[in-house]
Image (cartoon, rainbow, N blue to C red):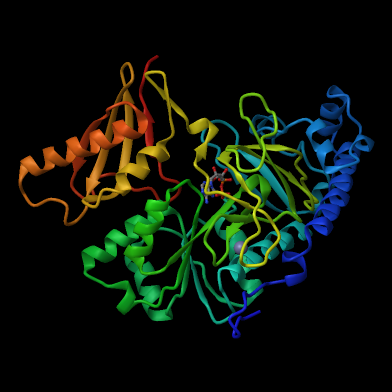
Length: 438
Ligand code: ADP
Ligand code: ZN
């Protein structure tokens, strides 16, 4: 497993480097089984298939997937709590839910094998970044109904790394654990990572000299390359992009390898498609659209053609690491996140990209929309961004407004605020507040 000879390390090389033809044959075999199982065992799917006039036998090749109906987040809510179970309830071993911001959450069941498979994929993902049993893994994600912390916890245990189930928040204690147990690897949201970097900076603590951190798995919310660099600089480690969603087991769906150039999506467990979110039509490799995922091995709750709402594209070119599973690009946003301001389509990540490229700008920001399309971007100055001269602040505000205008075609009001004044969330960051009454 370790790469003493400089070769890339794999968790299970035969699974990760399977030839494409064999991998696709495996996908088709597993897809057929999954489709047959949900048709027989889940009335929700039987009805959906009947409405779409397709039968399991119609799936003869991977391309036939396009004939099957989509499953949406609304579908999952509509069958809450147990309507999508494909096994008797007593075979389900764990329940997670996914963000129920309004109304009922989505209930996700795992069988014993599902729990094990989720951990396998996390072990595979972590080893791809260089983790070994010598590593000390501080898991700074929320434990609880969310999949985020648990699934990675079990993956790290499978590798045999020492796991510290720290959970989020409590920066002083996090730091103490890192120092006392010489943490090498952390799992953290981008917003908490930026906050933690600020905290170290304020303490005057140089992580390169005083900590043993090597890498961070950063995911759960969209972030940009500029943010990756800020986290890498602020914490003195390498950031690996980690993608997952509770509907598909949580983390470990797609993960960056040591090449850090797109995330391998584990195609022996999922079939991916990229579609035009408006028309539902498939898009060719390389084009940006909505990621649609079908589970291939989930027992308790298989899901067919799940509309993730996440916007990305497929990188079909082989990766230098030797893994044959194709990669997806960094998620640029969610189809639901798109803001329409004065007729212009804007993703919050476009704004983040500009803000994080300005050196005097700190690590936290908040976009507010009011009245009839008035946009205000509140952004923190960095610790060294303010020299006490007001005209410099005004100058910087104008500069940021102009740069944003070039990117998003409208000029928001910029409100620079002192570091540490914007609220920081332990879970997913809330970056947009839409008060418009349109
Ligand atoms: P969990 O993070 O526990 O899986 P959710 O299922 O609520 O919880 O969140 C999944 C969503 O989080 C994804 O659909 C995606 O929008 C977002 N997400 C997860 N990882 C990333 C990532 N690396 N980059 C961008 N967005 C991400
Ligand atoms: Zn790779």
